[in-house]
Length: 496
Image 1: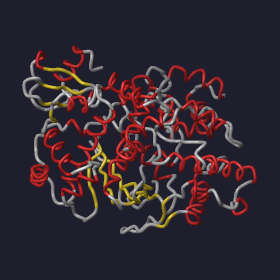
Image 2: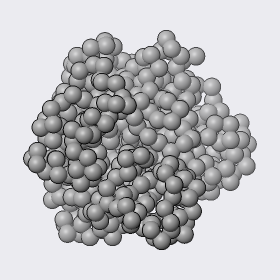
Image 3: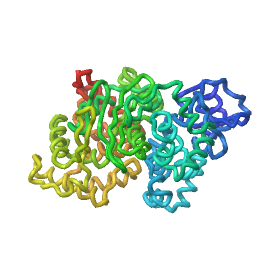
Image 4: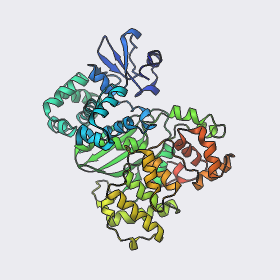
């Protein structure tokens, strides 16, 4: 979009927040870059130039605006709808792969050479993988500076910088303030952290966002010990490269309040990325809802509660295991089966607030489980053990960077994996916005109630007009049924 100058100028002049993250405005006279919704008086059109990423702005010598903080804007929703190498590279960079494994590690995961990845990213984002990772490190450093009392040297290495000097130089270059000045500035407007070791931040999103199905789904399917709904927040444990974490996510009118407790602050970037992915915060709900409204039978559902997101997962392998446990059983039964696995094979953690006790067991921990100890039909035991082996030996990989078509084919080749299981994993673990569940009982009931075709084949044909957003159509169709996944839990922690 950044190449359409006329459209970008109109968005800047109208301060349209829907375009935040789609492009960035760099002002030639001030050498500052902003998000489209920046509250300051828009510059003259001839003084504006546009870039596809914050990293491209920084690489061109522009610094972040102190008013609109463009480095914190939601990510481009374009990467949600694509599964090509560039989109997968962006998702891996968000997960901190470049910081942990370097550009060669990023390229190896994607099956390309470092030079090819560099060329592809430069062509689409105006910045290579190192520049994109550097911009992300700068934002992570800013969060730690403003929300913790950690010494600057610790922040530098936690954010992924190789030296304190590089950290200082980058912060000054990107924000036009020294790290100490950033902390002083933040202290004037925000209280000091209430709990040592806890990082509090705001996760932005594009409005509208309907929290009912998003948090309702996560709370209704929460695995005891790993997840819970407490005091208006969804809480869960996180398995991270340098330790574990506990996150509390609370819906607010204009952001998601995020409270993170991490064993090691080096995991902050990945933890934020996982939380944004879990809640589908980089989606463009206006584009999604406009497409779905073109179907007259779906339009009333969209108009009644626009902005529904697809509830995802923080770990693809975890969700695949849970999807198998949920085959042909109720939500309550699936939770019970998962809780037994957690108790027997999960890693214990300490939760200062109580309630959370374990990390969900990883495939390696489940690889040695005895199928006879599982209270499941024999066929489902075989399905689960085959899945766990494939995940543990690396022959099956599920995550934001996965090739959607390839992952579907690999899943379908496993015993006991039918269309429903494959598509629900594609929707919630892989993040495919076009995943569709025509065989789902709730979807078929909803279709019949609305007058849509009820058979899977006929419904799939009708749903062609909803592409590429059929996963979002699923969220709206599920609302026809009065199920706890459609409701925010009440204050006591149970569905109303």
